[in-house]
Image 1 (cartoon, helix red, strand yellow):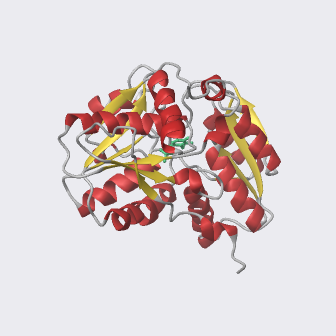
Image 2 (cartoon, helix red, strand yellow):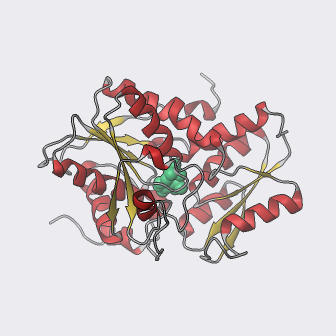
Image 3 (cartoon, protein in one colour):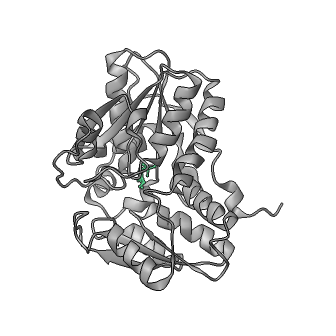
Length: 318
Ligand code: PMP
């Protein structure tokens, strides 16, 4: 049967953790977004943003797309660009793994690396992408503000979770890069059960947790986990959907990621560890009514060059 690869985006499995967190009074279920064709949850938004722009007549084959990306949205856009004849330019902060950079280059994207600069700096990756879009007339996908991002999570990710759980869940936990996942899924799950607890998993060093709690961004520091947390809240992060936050350190994120790989056979990246670590804390409080659902945003192949992942290959099971 011949089908467009883009049709394989979404409808990912939801599985129950068997060992990690098994001592806790609440089940944890994980949505395997690393099994999307481009290896991450961002395939969904890449396709949704391009579909939306095409429907509005803003995009025509042969045009150039540009995006500021931690890497995964870039890979998703590269799949869509290949299938639909667009060119792609990705602007990535230098913090992001060389594995993501080489994946993008292999997929034919032009990659521009920026210093890890704050939002106020001209060198910040989002500002560079905006400037290049303006100067060259390239279409900026704009995942941080584009409402097609939140919409596709309401329409697909959340709908799948409702179907796969039979409508039985007590909490939803996710980190926020653009905020699309937590805002879209959180809103629809609350629409289904109004007492669903929606919890932000935020890296220690991100300013988002403090902003959710107080309305003012906290001081920002550095952290190694990729794709989540920010110095300033993006427009697609809807504060009214979030009930509470869990702050997770790099060490805890990477330790839980290694356990997901070794004990569950889930070949996932660092932000999956952040999400599951936060879900375990919510489970430990025992105050939720039903299973906790969280997301495995991407796969381990994006981080093979990172020291925290290499620790796994050099420690055989005793
Ligand atoms: N984890 C990883 C690895 C990501 O790349 C992203 C997206 N930047 C997220 C989590 C967060 O998803 P969202 O943008 O929907 O908040």
